[in-house]
Image 1: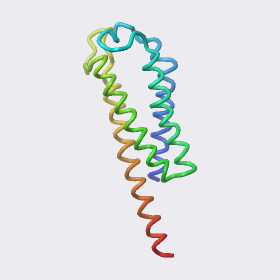
Image 2 (image 1 turned 90 degrees about the vertical axis):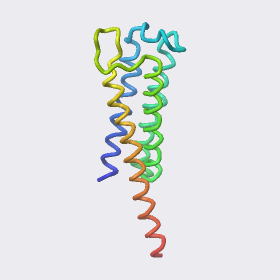
Image 3 (image 1 turned 135 degrees about the horizontal axis):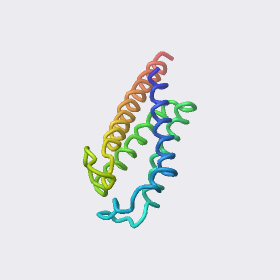
Image 4 (image 1 turned 180 degrees about the vertical axis):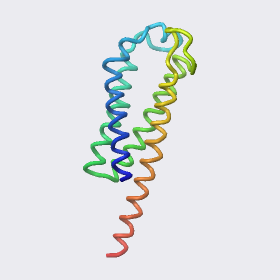
Length: 141
């Protein structure tokens, strides 16, 4: 059951990250990048789609075919989204309450920091559970 929940979490993050990279990031106002190293959203979109979305998609697929490796990949995918969100906060800022359209909706940052943390936690717990189960089976032989 734990693996199914982790699979759903990874798939959700993969879908929303890839969707966001293709359809949402290109529509964001360029003014939000004024304090960062980027002049456009090409690099952030690629990072979101490939690094965050790709790692979550790989974790989801691996959970189906190699569950133990997929659990570890989920930890890595969670670390990717946390890292992405922290860089985003450093560049576009963090204000939980939007006063106007020129401010970034920080509630999304909070949600994805939480989702990334859940990927790390659940991935680690799933991996530990599988590792302890396999060691008991090996010991029994």
